[in-house]
Image 1 (cartoon, helix red, strand yellow):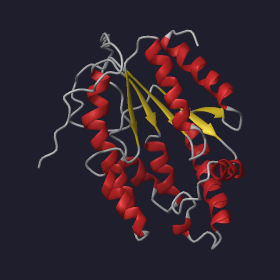
Image 2 (image 1 turned 180 degrees about the vertical axis):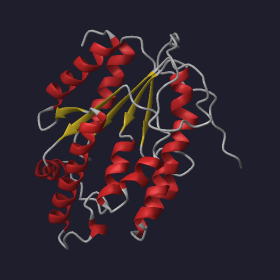
Image 3 (image 1 turned 120 degrees about the vertical axis):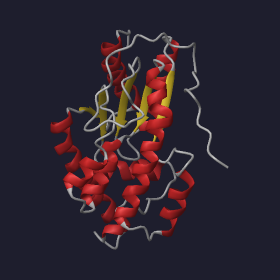
Amino acid sequence: MARKHPASATPHTRAPKPNARPVHPVFGVPLPELGDSKIAGRLFVVEGPDGSGRSTHIRLLSEWLETNGHAVKHMGLRRSPLLAEDIEQAKQSNVLTHTTMSLFYATDFFDQLVHEIIPALRAGYIVLADRYIYTLMARDLVRGAEPEWTRNLYSPALVPDAVYYLQVEPRRLVLRTFEKGATLDYWESGMDLGLSRDMFESFLAYQTMLQREFAQMQHRHSFEIIDANRGISPVQSDLRARLGAMLKLDA
């Protein structure tokens, strides 16, 4: 059965009032689906590793934005109904090649971009992305992908209005994972890279490598770095202050 995509995003609050801006910028050549339509919404990205509090802060930001009358749409990794289950099954096998995994995630991302993000932005929604192409690029680069190939792969992506990177020390990430009663993930520990036979040591090495990639991308893409070693309240206050300044809202 052919997949049915919604014509537009479903609002969590009252329908937004479009106030169209020029066509949204992209990193390279735009997708045909973007066309020359005007964009009325905003795209904000919250980046950071597992355990940095991304999901919690996006939930709190959504509640705050909706209270202030904004309709909010979410996106994230492995959320395309076209590929989400396939990616999860492939990851569980632990036999994915690096290129195959990269293309899986890229397809998942662009399916959401075309069928969810662009329609929502056209309608004037605020799109909150729980990670974006930056995580996908960083993962590819630490696995040996050519930087030019990776940039070209994601060149049709929309440029976010702002990117907030929740930075947490790797050892603190481990503690937070264990505090939640969870175990270290094979892929988030970089076990496929052969960094160490010990998952704990591999996790620390892999997360350190990712942070180095994000540090380089931060200079290129002007991320806003948020110290997420702190508790939820001060981090959320920082995020609201920054979004509030852009949207003219009281944090």
